[in-house]
Amino acid sequence: MQKKSFFASLSSKDRYMVGNLFFLYLIQGVFVILIGSILPMMKEEYGLDYQIGGFLISAHSIGNLLTGLVAGLLPLAIGLKTSLLLQNILPFAGFAITLVTGNPWLLIFALLLTGLGRGAISNYNNQIISTLSGGSAVPLNMLHGFFAIGAVSAPFLALMFTRTANSGWRKAVYVVIFLGVVSMFTSSFMKMDSVPYQKSQSGQSPFGFVKEHGFWHSAFIMFFYLCVEASVMGWMVTYYTDSGVVKADSAQMLTSLLWITILIGRFACSALASRMSSRKIILALCSGIVVFLAVLLLSNSLIPMLVGTIGLGLSLSGMYGTTVANAGDVFGRYPLAMGVFITVTNLGSVITPSIVGGIAESFDIRMGMAVLLVPAVIDFVLAVLNHPTTKSTQ
Image 1 (cartoon, rainbow, N blue to C red):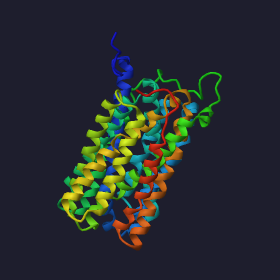
Image 2: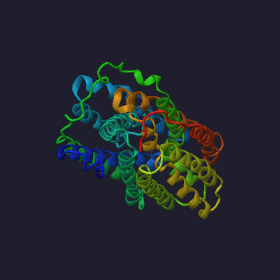
Image 3: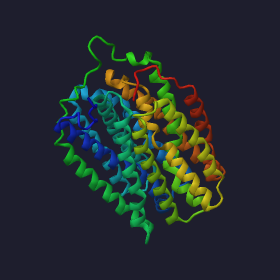
Image 4: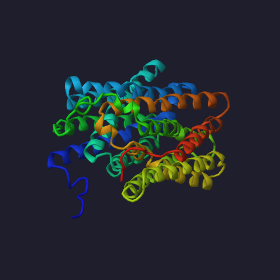
């Protein structure tokens, strides 16, 4: 008998819950990428330098990191749905702060809030989808595909409101806040009783996952991937414009192109995951990141920058979902594992954007972005050495 698809195997209430989690991830894609899209305008309006810009990107990542363990533990006290609803408010409160002040410390706090909310929703989404699918890479890549749909929209949103004046970035922020209100409404109808949240399966230590090789190898792959991903997403529009190769409008279009290719790549990885092992997919993606990042950094004209952008987008596309799947069913067996995983891995996204900003301030943005080749090469080495010992994710 033919095996049922992921969605066909779900009850109607679980299908609504999963659909809403996909919607939440779509909105995340919008607001996370919008940060990088409006950063040049915010820098200009508020008189911020590269260093402060790097701190803003890192503040978002710090929030994402800090919420890891809290998001994992909070449902034990107040329930999964209440935890999700409360923490979903934070990013939109953060965006509201950016509208009323240019004080660097308050802006850093605002971006911290966006990261706190992002980390929580990311934790719950990946935890729930991984649990319901038994650790399969197919629905996990579909989930991250919806993030890419939102991410594709963000540069167009920024471009639509800033074509006539840089101050139009504020209107884009209003749209994000509106989406946040809508998401709170749709999330209130979810029934999450089919996802029991407990410390571990009966008889297991809640932190038993720390002894599993597959968990740690996947975590290190994700760490170095996020070093690259967070910096690329935070600095790419600035890199496109300040490198002198393209104008501001074209930079937003290139960012959208990056996310269109990521979107295509994520759904392609979702299809490939049923035919190829996570190890082979990760190795192919890590190889592409090194090659196309180098092409992008060496580009001095539009065509090679276009090739680098498309190749890098495809290479970044399936890394998150496939790397989570690479750890097998550990997240289903140990609910606290996702919080630790997000906390550890997001250290990379905290540190690297600030390093890029600091070097860009001392030299230039191209030299700052060149630092990303180091984690990209390390990730390739880890991909070569990757031999999952956990349950197959196919």
